Amino acid sequence: MKRPLRSALSWAVLSPLILTTLLPFAVMISTALKPHEEVLAYPPTWFPRRIAWENFAEMWTSVGFGQAAYNSVLIAVASTLLALLIAVPAAYAMSRLDMRGKAAYRQFLLITQMLSPILLVLGLFRMAASIPFADGTLADTRTGVIIVYATYHLAFAIWMLASYFTTIPGELEEAAWIDGATRAQAVTRVFLPLALPAIAVTGIVTFVASWNEFTVALTLLRDPSRLTLPLKVVNLVAGRYSVEWNQVMAATLLATLPVAIVFTLLQRYLVTGLTLGAVK
Image 1 (cartoon, one colour):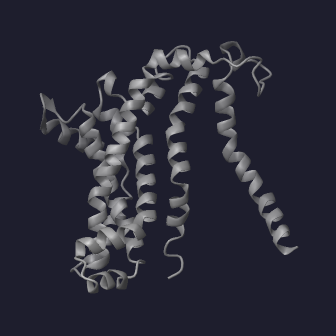
Image 2 (cartoon, one colour):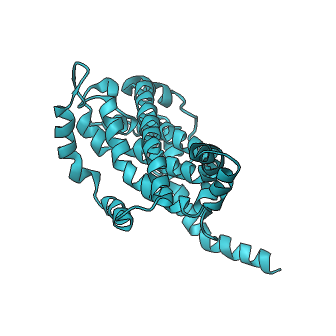
Image 3 (cartoon, helix red, strand yellow):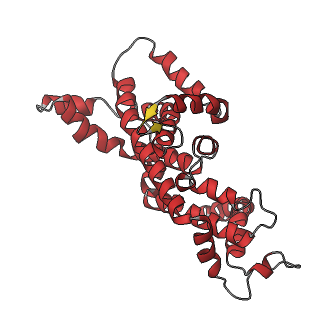
């Protein structure tokens, strides 16, 4: 009876936190499905008299949601892959090779995460505007945003992966060397499969941060065809005399779906990666 009692007590303690967390999502879904006349009606209601699917269609065409979704997916995926492509070998070197000043370098990587992007945004814009690219500069290009996102998240990715990689026994690679494998073969066939949960967790965090980022994208992007979803959602509210909250919530609901899908697909790796290294 101890286990059911502990389970019941845990649910009783966590229920207020769960309800508080889910309440904004419930309001978002309810508002997204309401007709315009019911959004600000008093007293408010949770369930609409009819489901207004036209909110999604009107929002899609009015803000160019499809192009913005493509931009966000491209920027988030590309910046995540670029960050991991550099962070994985760097973290492997930090966890396996002896180098002078390694501890100080790890602390430096951690300290860089204390700087908010808004402190660097002016310098990043001037730097992007001074680098030639195609017919202009890196400013107002998706490539520029991808490079900035990958660079900013690189320190966190290296620091997090290095902490995970140190928990993987080096004897496994040494056994592969004894069997005739090269270092590259030992890394690709032995080390990386064991490190996959940690790489997945780092990729999820980087993807979500890139997907939700607003300040850098607002500063670097000007062309309406290159704006990301956070910028498009803000444009539904900023500078408008009358705000269509049902369309705002419809856009917000669709914008959260990719992140939810990524979490659902990689949930197994997420749970494994978060507990990796808890017991050595």
